[in-house]
View 1: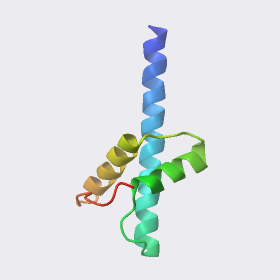
View 2: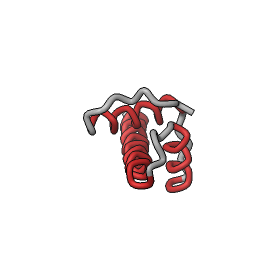
View 3: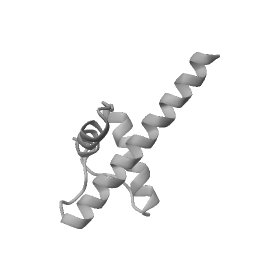
Amino acid sequence: MFKQIRARRTAARRHGIAMSAARKAYSNAVLYGDGVPTTDDVIDLTYGSHAVRLTDTEAHDALAAVFADKGRRFNGPTA
């Protein structure tokens, strides 16, 4: 039971960190005109801020969620 609770907390924390990094990558791309943010941007921001290593799939999902929140579709490069 405690392992399940810990796993849920860890997943929720990783999700929050990934979403925060994806929002930051998106806003940096918009503010500085860098084009479309990539999953590597999200991974770098996550590791630099929280020392958490995301997979490409986690970074892609977070970035796609941010794009969907803005009313756009993420079809950009993944790396």
